[in-house]
Image (cartoon, rainbow, N blue to C red; front, side, top):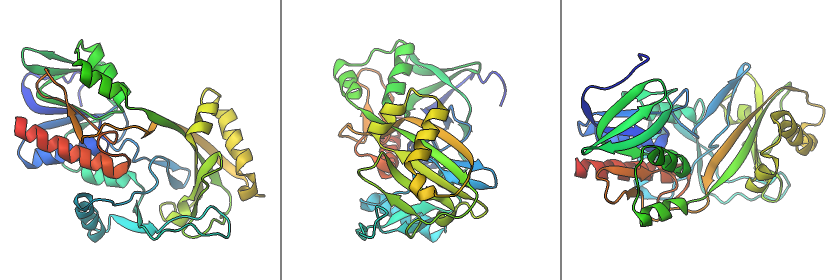
Length: 335
């Protein structure tokens, strides 16, 4: 990648955001022969499909698992199962007590960590990572994406898949005035924030099989052992996620203070175990709590500008996948 990626010709589609939604949309378009470029500010594809190396181990610190609720998504999951990419991790979780809460509904995880699913989806796609988009603008029927220190790219269409507040900032920076109803619908989408801590510890931790608990009424509502999950065979790393309410309470504190709060909360589980390393991830837009009813929003009055993601048509990883597929199909019809 050069310092200046300024483009001298117009491609078919630029997709901002290389999470699973953007990757699935790009796959639809590329398989139909369209030229697509994805841009992401992260160092890797995946967004909240995030896996981090810590010491000799690894930890999923975004999405922890996924479920299947529609036949359309089930087709992809069956394919991933056959390829050995994903596996059934559990059929529900306990709350750490003797009372079981398993419901028999499969929860799937990814071999090597959740980020491996994004990398699999991104194979063969043209993706620019570690690139920040400054603005998205329209001029004479073309779309331009301005990047920090990297020039600009031009395309016939743009798909925005970041969390909606970030997408709105990009079009506002580019002077794109949205239709009032579209703007209102997008601004109505709300997200829950989530603080996630990862503790590398010096010995195995006992958590009920298969190595995770979900505590609905606790500040730290999710605790998982990445060794038991199978993605960290060389080290025991706990992933812990706070509720949205507790995350908001702690959000403006220092990382050290937040990690100490996590440590105090899970002390009964840690016991005499020593924490060798503690890391924090702040997900400002971890989960949509209100969604747009359709799988994608086509901006009225602006040609080929689309919005998509897990806040469109349904949340969770499944919602993001289905939104990406829908957006890709809409763009094929419009190009």
